[in-house]
Image 1 (cartoon, rainbow, N blue to C red):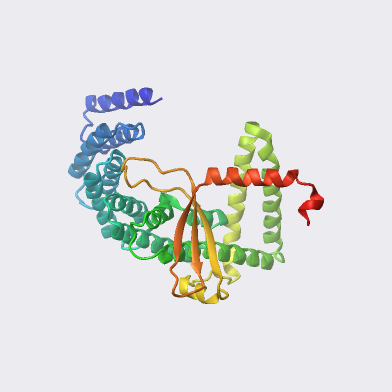
Image 2 (image 1 turned 45 degrees about the vertical axis):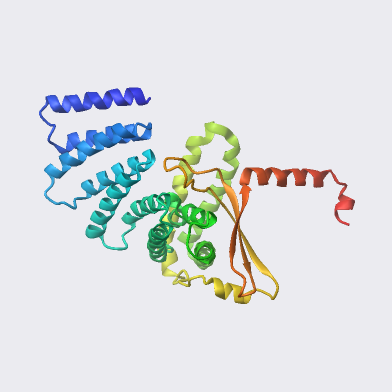
Length: 361
């Protein structure tokens, strides 16, 4: 429980003080751990106080002003301030963390993603949609670089993790366009959305093509067959309840290990992921006359009126791109996904009650 953990952290800090270790990294680590606990339970004032004490201590311990542990604490303080709705403190600390990491790691390091996504949310809540989209665009460019470098080096699961919307960046981008706070049209949002979708499909197809080339290599073929067998077992064990949890975890880890071994063999096939970018105007030009592309996206949305609020439930958004070059691309919120799914379920239920002979007429 939080109460017990809080008590243990206080005892730890007192013990370190009694041992004369209050000016050490161990004490700073205890303070930051206690601060994270307070942040997670919603006590943001206490969290910022404890994290601030840890920050001052680390500044006195380390000579380098850009030390990674100092940047880490600025990030923690900024995140706590954002959750508390203190946007000025959030922007100040998240910016410091970002600047320190950028100075040490470079302009396109993957360690910048978390801080940039949080800064984008701060800017969105402050009403600066242009700055928010600028941060998000940088995030997408960094992720694109990571995908280009790792799409056929890492395991399939590693690539899936890269494609996942960590930090809710796509959700924030779509929220900005949906609320009409983003400058310009929805074309940029559609470009990034289709680009990520296209890259995911391209990687999947190329992985499958590489696997077909590997079936003639005995070791690779054996690993591929074992992965398929394990996936079938996973699907069957999903019906087994909690008693099968340990077994499913073991099988999942085995699949990841096999995929990692195969990754280097796949790389040797020479099948690389495409590097093309999606261009909305090119897509529009390929549409038949008087037609339109309708792209549906399920995403949660940001509440820009309440800085400390959680995301909304999932909504279904629809991009509408007409073939007519003079007609703008539009983004429409169709409503909560739960309500739409209920309506779809009702229609399916009604259709199932109709005699099959009539359904085919």
